[in-house]
Length: 95
Image (cartoon, rainbow, N blue to C red):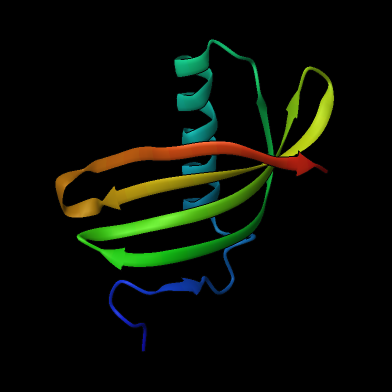
């Protein structure tokens, strides 16, 4: 059982449509905010934290200016409110 407020590894999320959609959402929101053209590649890893909803920590690969890079997105989701928000989006190094 997950500890409330604790961050834990998500199981089986590399092939999850829900997580892929959240990762694509994070890239799209980052592109809008920063006026950039990062292209989503794939989800590498996902962690989650149960709060008032769930915060997903998604490590993803994306292409930026023709170079494959790794980013971490922090996405807060409250499905009962139809709410999702990118809390953070940052590069973590070259892929």
